Length: 551
Image 1 (cartoon, rainbow, N blue to C red):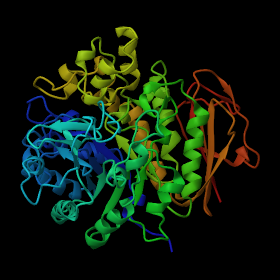
Image 2 (image 1 turned 45 degrees about the vertical axis):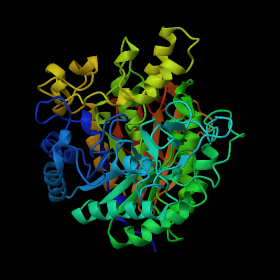
Image 3 (image 1 turned 30 degrees about the vertical axis):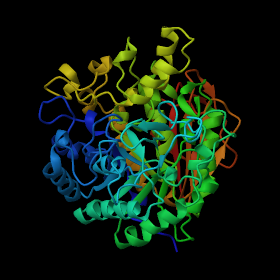
């Protein structure tokens, strides 16, 4: 019997709180602003929200360095504002998903302060190691953000592990007391009425016993020893047994370098899964290698291979999480689409993934075609990872070339304030914005698209409405056509009621298109297209079509 979880029928909207909407004029996005825009989110057809971290934090990694898991930061409006948003969302039949970040905490967290002072029971809440006899680091693992994975604490006279920023100390999940703390956090929010969690780099929480040196990876040393570690499944099972199984909630896990086969170890619905969905990175790697900073030319075949691998690999077994943008990657129009054909390519990219099987997520600003940001000075960047890249990687290249790497690869392009209108600061705030507004806000904004039936915004509304109405999207199988094409992505969805054919051009040129064998186009209805006039055998630049056959 099919697992009928509520998340399978919803479209969720991701909010990165700092840059969504400022409701009190202090320049920082907040929950007051979110509350003002709940009806806007609902109008898109979205019936759920995933919040990036709202907790108190020093802000070294924009909230992913948490100093208190059981509170809402005052800069976002505090707990009262959060409860108002939570109630407002539920009144609109919208679910609310929180970000759970338990691989690490801020070094400003009380646990860490007590741990380096060796105050029980916090002494072993983190991964501490003495320096080796020869004065070297405990092992050769790399941080994914800055330098090596170890930082010295003078008071404790030991190193602590940080797989990310120096101020993000890794928790020792092997300590059962730490796992009890995690369960307290989960229970606290679920009891309040939160509907689930997106678990940040959760596959990193179990490190290989003994923390051995890594002689396998030439770069990102250690990742083979802390990704999908020896006790990961055991700990996730514990969280599900002791907490999640008691609630009607959804658990989504961020999982770098995961394959469909590996994902099924966690989300196979026939095997009492410990998770509901996993966020894979494969569909974000069609123009880069490993991270967005190692930029390569966009390769549609690589993207199609990733889409098809996940659609086919999970079919009948697990459920896909679908996305093309989030807070961790540059804007998709600038990557897989075209700023020259911004409107056309933004609509096409929406079609390319919204009709796949799974639960789609839309990232703030994606629905109006927000694009990358091109600052003139590297000092304008806020992101800790971006700044490390500029000042420590490829330093033999000219400053201009290094800045260009950031234009292609920085997460900050997705973190500029949402562009609500063409007034000062894009309508994001009446004060001084905490971060730079993209200069194209006078052209690209919600207000200018709201009443334009041909806008990207209204195209998203049409596409989301359609995907909810079409049974083949929810239940149908998936078949890809023209796998070798480097310009066209063609796939079908089919169930017992209807057949769909989706065609997307990733080219700025006219492209000849051959109808796949077995599709009688005389009986097809073109139910969605981003152009008014359609040539049956020629695709216009970044054209997208959805055909339907009712049985």
